[in-house]
Structure formats: structure tokens, C-alpha cells
Image 1 (cartoon, protein in one colour):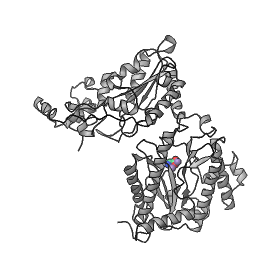
Image 2: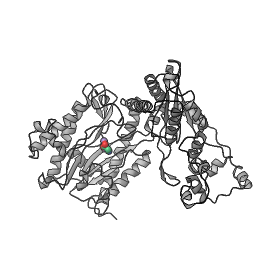
Image 3: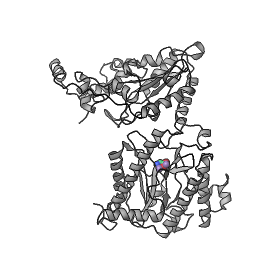
Length: 556
Ligand code: GLY
Ligand code: MN
Ligand code: MN
């Protein structure tokens, strides 16, 4: 089933309406029939090449009639609405007198008229409170007004522009694969999103004017626009065109846009109560996903692609309880665990080895967990595996100790590195003393731990990534921050600088940490971390799964 028999989507329509410079509509086609020009035939026409949808008046009338009236139920206000309003008010204070344009983005094309599942840009989700499915091609416009007379006594009035669901008497209903109810199911009306998120809503047709009116060079009395760029190409084109036409310095404008992106990242450094609640849900679902992984481990053994069995089990949980994965699962057995972002997951799972699983469920609200456990495939760590695992665990515990208000974010990494450098030296692997290794000119221990120990976590797995260095790495830790603690040691088969017994072992332990007034809370503490606890947890799951265990036989 494909979208052949459909009208073109809202994206193309929006582009034409806005007359943005990227427009490649039919009016630009010469239609002279030369092969080279045929090759440039616009996509909407090419899709029409395959259409067999009847288009006579009788058919249109028949399709438009005989449908039950839509049910009119009132939409309750979402609990996130008040939090999103407070976030917008904080943003407003940073950019008085400027128009802020925050697009949700459009669905990404996978091939031709087939798109990837839509996920809104995280800045849009944060400022509107909208989660899964909401809302392709929507744009939040924060219009400046007199300080104190805007929303929540801020200096801006926010409006959400989007393409609402059309009636069943429209051709969109059955002929638009991107928006039509026949194709994608019911979509929100203007009233529904207004009521649910407590935001004024307007049809997308008013967007061009809303974004460009009175815009221009601030020095000449024009209104300054700041845009979250690279999210919706139509919006980039519209704003750029407006800037060019009104004599705005493009370089300066780009810098202003970058500052907005930075501010939006920084706005998320401290999570509000709603966000912490959603992160707890994501973590709880992720923990259940890890239980599923242990359950299928016996089935993963022996087949050629046992890692896929593990990946699949977790994905199933992510879709069952959440929206999706927060990022591609890393299911890395044996030496694959030493590849930091091993997402190919096409290796086998062998008793006697470890399997490192780094996975996170993304909740319907789009907040994600990010958890790693390194499990013994047959339920018991060998001595050398345990030695390495314990070193990583000690490093993580040291990091937890310093992950408290008042310390700096970078102290967390430093604490973990001290433990690892000392342990590597004890094992005779460091060519220098731990002190030399820990010095700036040394860093030899990083051969086996080349990544950072922590990153902020939230709507994005690497949340707040555009925040300024002084507010991220060099920042003082504050209550409400949520970040990971994830030290590891990775000894590759190919590493000739270490004794053979270490080779082919990769261990990472990753937890999600909420900073509190008193210190911190390990949000993922319910998932066993200590080696003996991991072993008894695995055994408990296998016992529960009646007769299923490591000896249950190979994968089919
Ligand atoms: N899962 C990616 C990370 O741990 O940062
Ligand atoms: Mn992580
Ligand atoms: Mn991770």
C-alpha cells in the first residue's frame, strides 16, 4: 500500500502558498518533453504518474457524503500545559522585542512518498508540551508585545500554527496521504490543540504573514526575527527571503538564530517536575525492557545474529510502553562491546562472553532514558570480567559521590577517571603512573575509556547539547539537572598493549541521575548494578521463565 492515489501533501501546498524560493512547483516546469527536463519533473507530478484515483465529480460527491459527523468531545487540558507556558515565559525574558519562530519540522522522506515516523523537534516539544505525533509542519510563533502584557505577564504572545484536520466532506479526507483522515487517522482540530495545550491556534495559511509582517532591519525600525534553523526548510527559506528583502544583515541574523538555539538548549538544563516525572516513566519502561532482554538471552545464544534477538526484545518493549527508542539500541556481545556505538547488532551471542546493552525507551512525551548494563551471557561473570566490571562500578560510584549541587559537571568525569587510572595502573596496563596519566599531558588511561562520563538527558538523549561550555562542562551542578553517569573500559581483541586475558571485553555501566537539594537520586537504581546482584537478577528471571535458561538451546 502506498500513497500513489493521493493529492500532494501539505508541505508542497505550504511551499507554494508561501512563495518561498525553494519552490519547485509545476509552474516552474517547462513541460517541453525533453528527457533532461523530464528528469527534473517535480515529485508531486511523478507521484501523480502512478495515480489511478478516480477524479470525476460524481465520485467526489459520493466520497464526500454519507459519513457520520465527527464526535464533538471536549479535550481536557494536559498537565504539561502550565509547565510549557512557564518555559515560554522564561524564553520570552531572554529576547524582549523580538519575534521567535520555533518550527516542529516536517516528516523526513524515507523514499518517494514514504516518510519516517514523525517526531517534532525537541525545542518545539519543550515549548509547547506536545509529544508523539504533534504536529507535522506546525510552527510556534512568539510575538513580542509590551513587557509584562504578554502570556503569563511575559513580553510575548504565543500562537501555534498548524494544518488542522479537514472535514470528511473534503478531498483531503480520502486523497491526501500525509494529512487525510482516511490515510493517517484522525488528526487534531484547531480547537483540540488549543484546549489541550492552552495555546491559541491558527491555520497554517496565516503563517507567512505572522512570521514576516513588519520584519526587517532592527536599526531601521524593522522587527527582528529569531528562527530555530535547520528544522523546517520552508521556514528557513521564508525567513531568509524576508531578511534579504528587508535589508537584514544575514551574518548577524545567523548569529542571532544560533543564540536562540543555544538559549533553548540551556533552558532545558534544569528539568521541571513534569519532565522529571516523564523521565521516571521512561526509566521504568527501560528497566522492564532490560528484563525482557534477560528473558530472551537463552534464545539469543547460538544463532548467527543473537544480538538482533536482544535488540528486538527491547524494541518491542519500547513500542509497547513508549513512543519509540530514544536512540538505536547497542546490543554488543564479546569484542563488539568495545565498539562504542555498535548499532549493527548482527553478531552472535556466546556463553562465557559479556553482552553490553545500551538502550532507552522514549516515552510518549518524548523524554528518554539512557541505560547500559553489561551482562554475563550465561549468568556468571568470569574472574577477569568481574575484575573489570568492578573497576567500572567503582568509577561510577566515585562519580555519584561528586555529582552533587555545588560541584562542577566536569568533576564527575574526573572522579571516574581517577578510579580507572588507578585500577589500570594496578593491573600493570598503564605505561606511566596514574598521576602522569591523569595530567593533561598524559591521559594514557583514555586509550581504554575514550568517551565522556556524563551527558545531560531529557527530550534528547544528549540533551542540551548546544549549551555554552560554561553552562555545561564548566557548570556548577544544580538540583533538577538530570544526566548520565556512564564510565566504561574497552579492551579490544586487537589491542596488543594489554595481556590476552583482557582482550575482547568491553564493560559500561550507565545510570540516569537526578540532582536533588541533598545530593542525587539514581533514577535507574532499580536495575541491578553490582555484579552479584546482576547475577541473581538474571537467575531470578530465568527461574521465573520456567524451564528457560542458558541451556534451553540455540536460537531458531
Ligand atoms: N546511548 C548513547 C550514550 O550513552 O550516550
Ligand atoms: Mn549516555
Ligand atoms: Mn547510553
